[in-house]
Structure formats: structure tokens, C-alpha cells
Image (cartoon, rainbow, N blue to C red; front, side):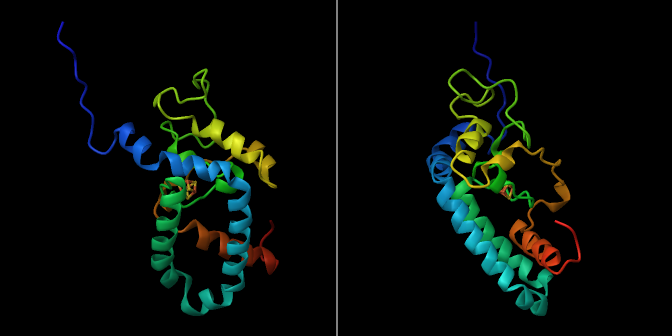
Length: 176
Ligand code: SF4
């Protein structure tokens, strides 16, 4: 019987994702504690610069910040720039790499070897998230239910939004 070849849209092959990004993504999970500390320092620096961002205008800073954030996080986490980063709550494993797009995982389909049900060569990003979270000071935040993804924020800087939110909390204008 002739083999049936299912059409594969370009750019969707898991082989590409696995070969190009996989090992660095796993390194980030293994070093989640170090990256957590690094991010806390960086986030505090962004917050200290809040008056400058206000002066320039957050909307003007957005484009260069998006380019910078994308470059750093694509390299380290295979980031998809969802605009609502949860890395601090997901063991430095980006949930947007889950082929099912789950923000609260894992699903019930994880293989016995801890790999993904859909992409069998890839360890489940949620199994990785749990492992990474165990090294982090804020690791237990993985137990909190994540809100649904707001796709209107796709391609925006979560670093800038987090900075502006922290500045508002600090000034007492909104609750934590
Ligand atoms: S959660 Fe969103 S912003 Fe954070 S690394 Fe994943 S795609 Fe990027």
C-alpha cells in the first residue's frame, strides 16, 4: 500500500524546533535559579528607570524594547512573544512552546518518558516547567492558575508592561 504523506505547512515541523532551539531551552530550565536572580536584578533596574520611560514615553520605548526582549528570550527560551510572560511561574520553561498552547499544564497526554504527546521527540514543556520551578525561590507560584492568553498583546513587551505595573503598585495606585 502506498504511504500517505500528510501535508505539513511550512515552518511547522517539530524537527526544526527541536534541532535549533531545544538544547538552549533545556539549559535555561536547568539554570532556572540563576536566571530568576538575573531577571529580578534586571526588573529592578527597569523599575528604577521608570521615570525615564515616562519622560520618553512608554509607547516610544516599546519598539526597541520589543526587539531587545525578543532577541534575548528567543535565544534562551524559544519565546513566542505572547506579551504576558509567565516564565517566573513556570520554571523558566515557556508554556507557549506547548503544541496545545496550554497555560496550565501538563495535559493528560504526557508520555511515560516525560515527552510530549504530539511532538514525541520533545520533552513536555510542563514537565520541564515543574522541574525548573523546584530550583526557584518563587517556584511554588507554578501552583497558581494562569489566566487565559490575551492574544491582542501578542508581539508586545511583557518587560515594559511588568515595569509599568510594578511602578503603579509601588505608588499605591493599584493593588498587588
Ligand atoms: S511566556 Fe510569552 S513572553 Fe514569556 S517566554 Fe513564553 S512566549 Fe515569551
